Amino acid sequence: METQEIDGNDTPISEQNSNNILLAAKTIKAAETLLITAGAGIGVDSGLPDFRGNQGFWKVHPNYLKEGLSFADLANPKWFDRDPHKAWGFYGYRYQLYRDTLPHRGFQLLKKWQDQRVTPGFVVTSNVDGHFQKAGFAAASVHECHGSIHYLQCAESCRNKIWTLDALTFDIDPVNLVARGKLPTCPNCGKVARPNILMFGDYYWLPDRADLQRQSLILWQQKIIDRNIVTIEMGAGSTIASIRNYSENMPGKLIRINPREAQGPKGTLSISLPALAALEAIDLALANF
Image (cartoon, rainbow, N blue to C red; front, side, top):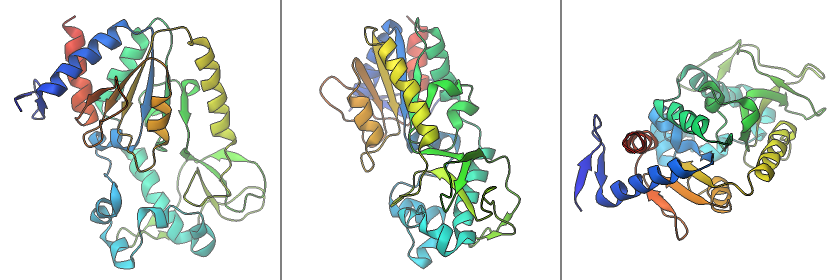
């Protein structure tokens, strides 16, 4: 298939992608409001690891391969009871990584497009890194459906209390990813705290903060019900399809950006590119209208 290159970028664009990029730009131009939905794939262009599948995870953390532990094995609340220093080695590493990583330019492009619309938009993401807020999106217009690593709760769920994680005070063994030092504790009972994140097999997650965000999302949906809405989805895989399903159930046009799984229901504008390359190409097309 004939390809071309994005101006200033080495990423090749197929003819189908090129056509859908132009259609996406026209669709965004005509939109009254934008819903942005995102999974973990949007962060790869920021330099965050691609943990897709066990092989991707073990490539980044070969020490866990030796133990036979997958991402799903470790992202489990049982570790805060069984071995809290191991649990915080895993989550402390992720917290530091997210904290020290800057969101890529694509976030700014998305914010610019939202700001240019007649009606304010919203963000729905399964990511726990807080990067949309870090990129300048209003916290009141972001729904983090799986929680956030920047907030804590008691690992024992002694009470419905969620508080901000301001900083970590322990070191992390860079080889074995085990926390060394005093761990975060619950201010109520004094036992170990954990991130306010929905984990695998998690019966203890406190959804209160995410529920408040969801209520704001529902109010926004009620306001835009008669508006010309466009959903832009990036980096949401089908293994855990919560974001994909949500995007597909929204009214209006769906633009799906995903280098591996860009397919969608009939009418979807599928762009088989990484998030940043696709967003820059769409922005270039918008500038030419």
